[in-house]
Length: 179
Image (cartoon, rainbow, N blue to C red; front, side, top):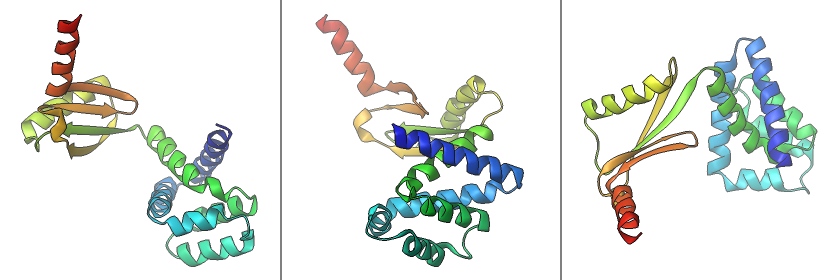
């Protein structure tokens, strides 16, 4: 819990700074890149979590990895985090920054799960319903296929889930019949 609070504070500070400098979009791209690299590279995470590697060496690693590929602001921020011995929080800070950036820009992540690829008309109807509940939001749609839901679809928006799957309806019917 304490780590997430600290990560949120650092992410909020970086967002404020990037908004002030009018480069929040570029810094967001950097944080997406950092988050993906941390998710894909167990070696980098091992370096981050290794207390025997000093801050200078870790800073050199980040400079070698990201110099010229990230905004100076982003790289400076990563180096500052490392100098303050908070580098283990970098993946959480990056993910939190991305969430805060999306909130600031009213971007809504929507996941649409179905058993087959939906046609554009069906997808459009579902998204129009979502848009009517979230006026002015920009929707980032992620689609996936899950045959275990048997039919229908599931829409996930943040922590909310709209389950119109056949598997869910059968489960509800079973519960009604058993009671």
